Each structure stands twice: as structure tokens, then as C-alpha cells.
Image 1 (cartoon, helix red, strand yellow):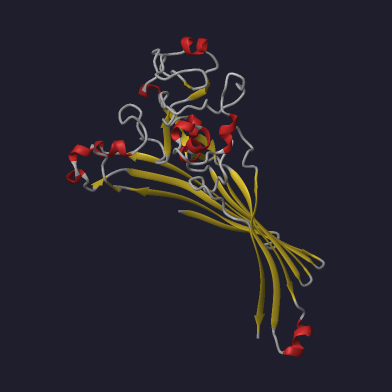
Image 2 (spheres, helix red, strand yellow):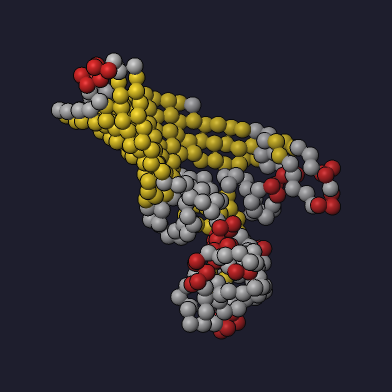
Length: 327
């Protein structure tokens, strides 16, 4: 770890920069085995070696103009992960085909699957495409990556990883006489999400549970008169194997959130002296106020909250009023 602390303009602008290298060896793992081997095969083995490299930058600017004071601070971090060694016994614990397309040199959270290339619009398109079991108008079309004229496991590709390229938090604070105001933003950039659990329920009838309500996106499912859509045609059968992992289930998880806003007022001491109270502060706070720019790139996130992609419930908005009294 190498760090640098700095300050400029009489330390009005200050911060720190840290760069680190972390090597982890012989992670304990249980190998993937077929069920016929039973429990005796579930043994702990020394698994992968992982390298992590990254930085964290902290910046802070503080100043005051007359009665107005402000404090702006930010934290930015980046981590790059790479698996450098994997024994053959545990290679199938990771994404990839376990042979020529394996996890070596990639992050642990790498995603591997098929490339969804839109929907078939006609029987002519189905006939002209590589052989794909279950193909039909309105069904997802998968790309023939190796060009052998058939869609199978050899057509899988690396589809990105779930580690963000940048995580950040920004705090803005203002003061004026006895009032104070603050806002806190945080978010991530360059993050991919595996949304199979969510999107198979909202988009594909055959993958959902019978008798339940479905996502409203399914109302826009493909039909011969509704072809300008990305939602596959409704069917009770999954002949096209649309539950297979593909780019259809990889979405952008970048977001910026206005995490909280707080407005406070400190009652002047001259007012409190009469009741022998040293300090009283009133505050109104709002949390999980707004999600910004979650759709700023292609392949936007279609769920409720990119911060909690595996949950059907977003973090709730809430307001709190507080009174802090010191005697």
C-alpha cells in the first residue's frame, strides 16, 4: 500500500490518495461435483489465487464567505481483480467452459453466456438463421459466435463482470448563521448486473410460476401485430430455452443516488440560557430521495432499484424529524 496526503491553499483543499496491491492465495473452496458422487465429494480444497489492485482518492474543500460556509468532500475508489491461478479440481466453480474459455486472467464475478440478438420476426428469419432448437417468430435469437451453423454451448462468450469500475460518494454541506444543510450522493459506474431472477418473471411467461401475477412488461410481448418490442412472445412452453444465461439478462447497474438531504436549525444560545439548555438542534432529514442517471447508457436497468437487483423491493423513501438537546 502506498499513500499520499496533501493540502493546498492553506489546507482549504485537502485529500489523500492510496494505491494498493493485494494478493490472496489458496482460497478454500468446495469443488463442483455431480450428484452421484454424494456427500463424500464435498470436501474443502485450496482453490484460486487472486490479485487485487486499486486506489482510493479522498478530496475535501472547505471555505467560508461571510456568513456562508461550505464543505464539499468526495471519496472515489476503483478495484481491478484478476484470478491468476485455479487448480483443475475447482475450475468449474467459476464462469467459463472450464477448458479454453476459463476464468484465468479475469475477475471472479465475470459472466459467461450467449449473445441474444433480438427476436425472430418471421419464419423466413428462422429458416435463414443457424439451427436453433425451439426457434420461432417472437422467440429470442442467439448469435452463432463460432459460425458452425448451430447454436450450442460453444457459442457462449464473456459478457462482462459485476465489479464496478468506480464507486463514489459526494457530500455537500452548507451553513448560514444558525442553519445547516447537507446532501449526500453516492453511486457506481461501469457495473453489469445479472438480472435473470427479476427479468424472467417480468418478461417471459414460460419461466414464471403459474398462478402468480406477472410483470407489466409482459403486456408488451411480441405478437405478429406488435413486432417493435424486445419482450418475447408469450408461451406456456420454453422450447427455445430462454432461461439460458445470455445478454438478455445482463443490464447496466450504474447509478447515482441522492442518498439523503438534511436541513437543520440550531436554536441560539441566548434563547436557551433561560431554560438552562446548552444546545438544541432541530433537523428534518429525507433518505433514499432519488435515483439519478440509472438509464444513462445502453442496456439500461429494467428493475426497481439497481442497488438491490436481487430484491423485488427498492430501498424506501423516508423522512425523519429529530430534536437533539444537550444540557
